[in-house]
Image (cartoon, each protein chain N blue to C red):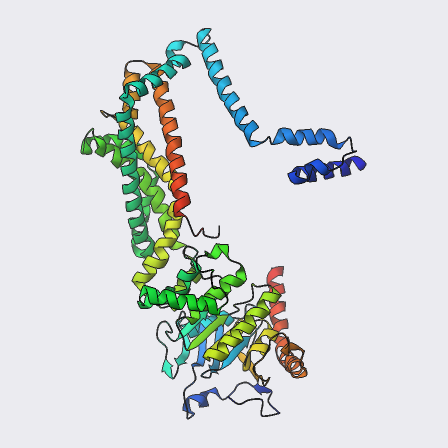
Length: 293
Length: 290
């Protein structure tokens, strides 16, 4: 009975960290519980250190396994050589033209995808008849694995930037389209009625209620849209191109240079993280009137 | 308007001779419901409702929860077309949105992506008022509802009471002749509510709008209104009684509740609506049991 009550009390301590130092000083039963609390959630610095240590451990394990020939180096690469490859790309400046190409493709796919998604999303959202007419086709297009359109786009738009942008647009479009469509369909009816009572005509309802309301949904999917644009660009490059990080990987693979493949993957990952960070910054500036959840 | 003069002022049993009103000499009422019915499919929300709001009059509609009070208001606003009957605004049959009316909604109706000031001047923006003039007027109205200096705040940065003030300014800045209010203060805490009610009365005294106020709170209805109309329990809601409130003005909504005349009126009206409240309650219980 008393044990149960002690547990209950320490549970409360776990829930309320501010009270941790002050509770039950002379209660031995509480002490191990408190330690477990610290183990459950360390401070931010400790956490970062642990994360870095985990990373180092993984790299060292990789290195050890490859060097001890437990894993064949031909298939798994060597972390030291991978690192050297990345450094040499940046030192020679060879990588920048590829990074720039991928970045431009990503941005273009993102902008065009968002623009077309908003436009068509608004149109179908405001016109139930058109929406009903297109419904099965949109469902089919969305269900289709659209990466498979890559080869067709290469035939249509060539090996340059165009085919990659087209692939990215098909991926971004649906993310934005569904959000805008939903946003228009689920505009707060009270806000809509209020605007009508305040004297808004149809055009004013569109510009002051429907579009801002739909945009708040677009913002909530910015991360995903940018991610999709990036996937489109890289996969497009990988399918056939003359520039871009995806092209680097394609080339390395063709020469069985697994270290360069890994290096390319790491560069892409970092690139994606930076892109995501940039979106977060833009988001913070754009989303001012945060809608009530 | 001169009431409080007749000592026998009290319940006027329905059906009141509403039909006569249109034939009456003098200015037509601000709002006239002429045998209005509203049906949603097989469900009849409002059945044969006739009532009016005189020019500059403050009328409250009280009824049990879920009895279709908001439906009546939406008809008056022109957001909903009656299935039968007619709604007249200053003697003219209403078509489309009621341009003479402002509507204060029960739920938050502010645009979350606009600041308080920008929300207040939305109506002026729609009317094509020049930006600077609109903002000047907007700031005046913010001050009038006690929010000067808060113009740059977004709705999510304000309390429920502040948001209601913004909504009030947003509605009144357009200077509508009729103000429709749908339980506007029901979400506020009691103190804020009394404060807002007093401010509303002050604004009403200054600008003399015709007000149709909907509430389920009988005390609120009596302390604010010139006339209180009782609705039957839904479905097929219709007015069953109306009472003239002969309490002197100006009123303080907190203090007036202690006066003997208020208590007397309260008992009279409560007697009239008790049965309907019980009916609505039983219906809800049955719904829960199913």
